[in-house]
Image 1: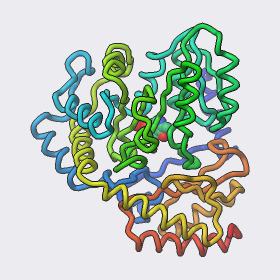
Image 2 (image 1 turned 90 degrees about the vertical axis):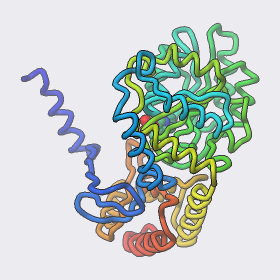
Image 3 (image 1 turned 135 degrees about the horizontal axis):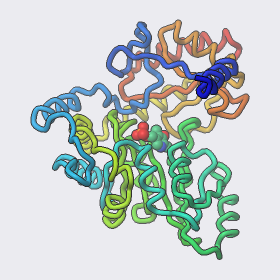
Image 4 (image 1 turned 135 degrees about the vertical axis):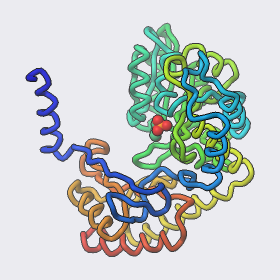
Length: 392
Ligand SMILES: *Cc1c(COP(=O)(O)O)cnc(C)c1O
């Protein structure tokens, strides 16, 4: 038994230092309101940007397709797990996004683990924003390429590092989150594309929080900046705005063909489930038909953020519906979150080490599912508790 003692010690350390993650249990569908640990609360925490997680049309498609195709493919894509509906969703996603081709993965996480090691390896160089998502970091490590971290969004720092490595042999890859999930800020993709062209580097963006949010009708960050053809690899997820579970990579036809040959999660982990693919098809159809949900999401974001700023809250540098409410002190942020929960609102406090010490915050995630009444309800509670705690 002694050989596993380190586990107990580590768990105790996490609890002692306030780093232990307490896992809440949801007992209803995820929607504008949901039931958390037995209490019905306003949901300001899910990545359910467009309200698809409990959308009637997505549910109807999932049920209909399960009747025809069963539950799961019971194989990896490359053996006998590729159904016609996988191909159809890949085609529809590519069409929607205005990309040449798209390949599905089981999640955004596995899309990064599949792509980065397939593109670069030992002797190559990866230039990675210091605040990139964990799945990018893990994909970079798996690749065995040399990782060069540049300061968050800092084009000068990146260019200096590209210059330093200019004459070294090996491929160069620049990789960045599209939208950074803790601050809601956006990568300067046009300038990154310039640098990638100048230094002959491959450019990859992980648009997990931009799919369904940025660009015309939610077509993503490449569309947002009008950079079609100038970004080599765009990773997306179905697990946020699309309300399902899944990931994908968009780019040239050769890129997706190559990832189907070389992407290890594609080759060695089973294909996406029928329900996810069916709901994905419904989501793309809805988004192709109308940008109404995306507009509502942004209207809600603008309304809520405008009112919060008027009250004197510091929302950092967000440019998206991700709304960090900066509190500063770690304990105060946690107390704020607890008081909101007592007042029927669920908002996660995000503290060190997820964000730098002294920048503890509440992270409010807005959604097209919220009504104006929902937002007014939240604003009233934020004002009351914000004053009580001396945040405003
Ligand atoms: C959430 C997220 C992922 C993971 O996506 P999943 O589909 O949930 O695995 C990957 N990258 C970024 C930047 C994310 O925000």
